[in-house]
Amino acid sequence: MSDLLTPARSLAGELRFIRYGFMPNRLQYCGGDDNTLLLDYGTTQVVDAGLPPLLHKFTGALPYLQLIARANGLPDPFDSRVVEAYWIGNELLEQVEVRQLYDALAARFGKQLQGRTREWVLGKAPAGAHPHHNFHVLDVHSRVGEVANKLETMDKCCVTAAKVVAVEGVELVVDRQPITLIEGKLALGPAQRTRVVRQVEARGFADAAVPGDWVAVHWGWVCEVLTPQQQTHLAHYTRYHLALANQTI
Image (cartoon, rainbow, N blue to C red; front, top):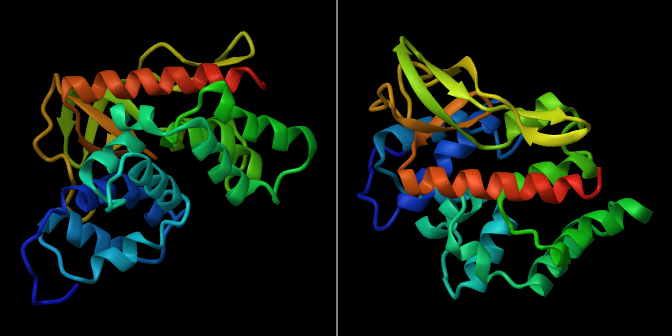
């Protein structure tokens, strides 16, 4: 990261994206080999012109951000409202038309999919899907071979909410509902007490979290503290897309 840092013009969206993209990047699932830089940017919250090229390497998420932005007449795919819509969920998702999502899915994945699998994925748009991260996990990348289609992987990759029970060193003890199978269908299971990582190299994005707070968890990493409205939106869009995924299980 450059020594000559400039104050953010309106970088809340880019910084929020880092919170969610950091851990899968660290695990080498998406983006470039940039996790140290991303941690620097995300924790200092002061960035330079080197950040946008790093974020544009997230080729799995970027087309969804561009779609949400375009459907809402917003010029910047990293607008904070757009980033929140993709990772957490908000009203911007409702403005993406069925045809827009269908065409976007067909352009990206149509040639990779064959037969019934292609029909299932593209058919999610008219069935009511939204360009939300958990839709992508549950109904798209499990079928296009980006990550092995295992329940444990889906659970880790979905963004879920967790209630903080205790702060213990670099970890939080939380109560979290995992993605599981109940009678052969995907569902949020009963809350389980577990540990999630809040800091790497003594730095994190949710250092202010205290018992009683709700946090967003992605790949076992604490992304940020959620407001009550964000918690409600995340729960809604997660359950919604679980039900949609169950239509083709």
